[in-house]
Image (tube, rainbow, N blue to C red; front, side, top):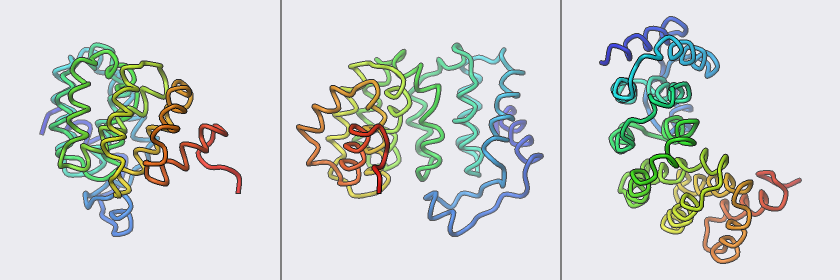
Length: 238
């Protein structure tokens, strides 16, 4: 275990009880990893304060710590890596994106994947390191690992919700079309999420895509995306 990981884990343990497993939560979160009973706001305070005190760490230091956390035993440690990415400096975010390929081998279920694959890191670094990210995202969409296939969609959710970049839109639509025949909720809901995330900055492109390919999408993705386009909300009035 990385020394910084040890320090973070100690802070988690000091602010929570013993790690637990619950059958209902396991089914909901999609994995059987133990979790510490600690709230997301407390985790964010720990992450923010720790990162403020460690501005001197390099991108390589961050990569080593994130790898150790993601390979940790609990879902809390894995998710903490994603939370901490939000508080990295610009320089600390410049580690090799190929690490996500390794990290996703240790993430199971929507909660862990989404915690690591959304947020401020993706908003800045996917566009900034696009030459590396583009083939990686396409490869994820073709992976036998369903969590990598989900990641090929949700990694786009934060950046497309914040910036207009035609390069991103092209691969979003490409990956959606590649995965739209899948029935697993991990994929169908991810398709809905990424398309809805495009409404603000890609309304014209998304409207055209829905006219051409909307009928071939999973029903939940088609319905939620059309409602968002028309109303700006996920679901319409009942």
